[in-house]
Length: 471
Length: 43
Image (cartoon, rainbow over all chains, first blue to last red; front, side, top):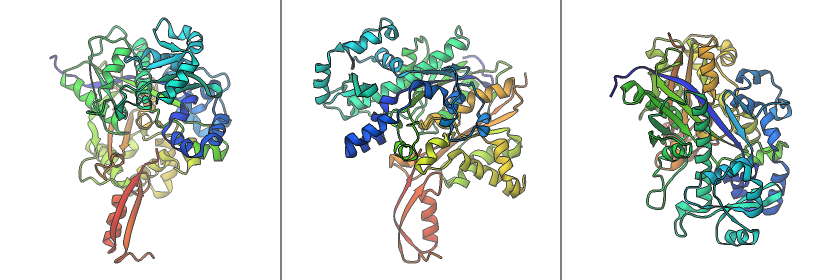
């Protein structure tokens, strides 16, 4: 084992998959459709976005790195009415693929041979499948399999284009719906990992993969067995890397960044990639609010991510483990207690004021997604608390709080993909700002809703600091 | 002013607002009995 060195965050990439027809498989739409039927399905279908609209959506352009998050301050809301005409489906921070490409990747990532495509659709996808073997069936056979519990795959106009069979006829943890959800996470994670490794030092071996998503991979005896990281690495074509998952609800990625940094610091590994796939369950989560507001269904993007944590290269932003914090037992989880533990305390340990941090990256949910559904502006609420603590500490006057929030905060721009939205969408911009740009320090802050699992009433959180390299 | 002394309380919290444990602490300090508490998370 070579001696450790300080860890740096060298790069981050996102893979966005436009999945309008998977919106119907999202948790909220599925439940609402079971009660309200055809009429709701028709209304949802009428409000789905075309691929071009998803590409031109300003927050998507921020996710791809083609637009700075701060540019959204001046962009009139709702942002879907201010499309970025002529925008590209890829950028320095990642790529956005269309739904047929996603279907091809689901087939490519189908290790257990549970995906079947309609004969005619497989012909249309031939170019995207690129020689991948996939089972195909005529429509009549697909329709029969659906009556036996398989999960459908649809295209535009409710066209049946394929299905996902269950992994076992007597296992609730392997229903077709669960397998599809997990496959969607696997392939979007692999797309992000592949994008990262194609663009960033492809010749340098990856030692370890840390999964950090909220999916549950397993079967009836071990529903959360996990280690999607290795399945993702396999699909991305890696050899030689180990893997494991960090499970911490939405705080998973930031917890995993801390663990990755510690692994590099210890000298055990030199290159660790923190990754996660997208959440199919969260597609269409706020659809009723969007329908009521006359918006398109904005939650039609699955998002995967990959973050490169390596030994100090003299250039990339330092991952300050001495500025890492987690919400400990007994810290309390009211908003001000969380901010005290995750934002204030680590900065004080470093001898910094809150205003010494150029940007705080909190949960960066797109407010155009959350506000029509009554969930408020999540980043803004978090920045209000941080500014209040700065005022309480005497760093700023109370009247200066809005200016502090604007200067040190960010507009939300991430799809509501849970763990994906939690601070990490800012990473490509943070890395650019901390190397070529003027930033000196960024703090990433994530929260996890442990109470949702009904094993505790507690919340959780994690934070870490990035600092400009001295090299 | 809400008088909670000797009242039964259902604490419905929201993670990005006031979580249920905080509501419970306030309600119990005011003399109420919290019979149910749950925190929702809407993102």
